[in-house]
Image (cartoon, rainbow, N blue to C red; front, side):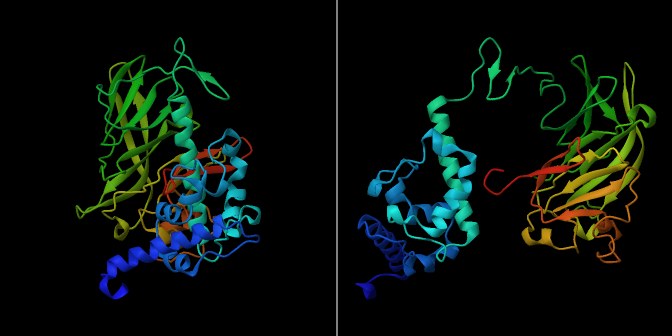
Length: 371
């Protein structure tokens, strides 16, 4: 039979056989934890998370986590949704569950693949929750959540000069500044919208464009507002995240941006055409510093290197000078002084950044399976 099959058909038969072997070992009810079959081990490195689930888990746990095979219970009951179960799920997959005759997959799969399966389980649970309860609905205009009740009001309609609102901050006088990813910034007050004239030109490149706006904590004294945006390359090919500041003045009839100064930008060799993962949040620490983020632009392991600007959180003084006590100040290449601003590395695409009252910097990342 093998000689009559094409190479592709034989590969499929091998995968199907691996599932059959796994199913038999589970259904047999043998005691002790078994390692996954060697046929399974051979195929794991090139399998996606969904394929791993289909090949190794589906027969017992069902296509949507509903269970049933070999007496397996569902993932979808409320008690299985608890956040603290992430690690137990990981351990069960890696080490096996002897009482349920579930084999261990620690040798068959990498930790990254096992965590991917944990995320997949959480996605199944999320879909089940939405099926059961549907989308949130307001009662008398009020939405109820686990911790707060809230209302949703439209402040600015997208027909008023906004296409993809990205960043929001408020002036102490009550005006709201809103960036528009395709380009430009608007000022909103009492429902009236006017453009902030004079802001720099940005490049909408995939996820990039005019992104963050952040008002200096001492705005009443200095008038500074900071922007993070994708600056187009001088060559006309690609762009990269740039941080600038300027003074904002708002009157009853106009809003202007002036006295622009560059706070941070990378070398031109890092202006790329990649349209993903620009990062771009800005926060202040109350001690004269600002922190901002640049994503890894799809470069993956480049985030771990001190020779490029991608996948990093940065710290500079509010005038753009770089503190000498930054952790990597003396370790970056001498011809790339802007890298002295690196505060931490190894990030994918941080787009949530906040400074707590205790002075702790918290960041959230967009992960590869939905963030």
